[in-house]
Image 1 (tube, rainbow, N blue to C red):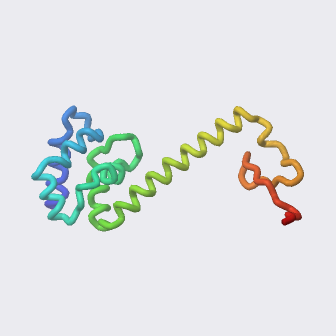
Image 2: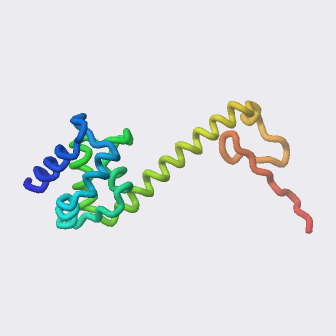
Image 3: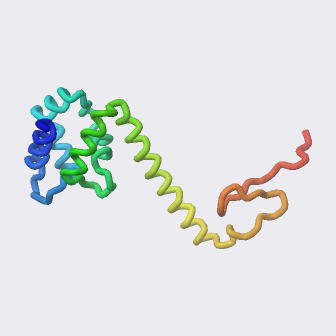
Length: 139
């Protein structure tokens, strides 16, 4: 496929350190090139959201994208162009979920008795998270 060959050639020319993968900086430099922008626009790809585009091609979340990730990511976005916002959102949700989990683990380490049974009037809604029940509320 001619488009894939051209994308691969662009990738190789942007791999400044010869590592076989593009860092975010290399990717950003690639997306600034007029020839690349024109080529991707002809493929109906919006290159204005570089961060979301990079996260879409960095499949394994390592902070760099090898040629296969790059080609697969670009082609996936092309076939679901409007999904770039969803891809970015999914990445952000995953990242926030990981951060919440890490905070929860840190809190449980600092306050070890969170794992005990709740006192009367409290209900466990998540492991280590208690919620006060309002029983017999009076006005």
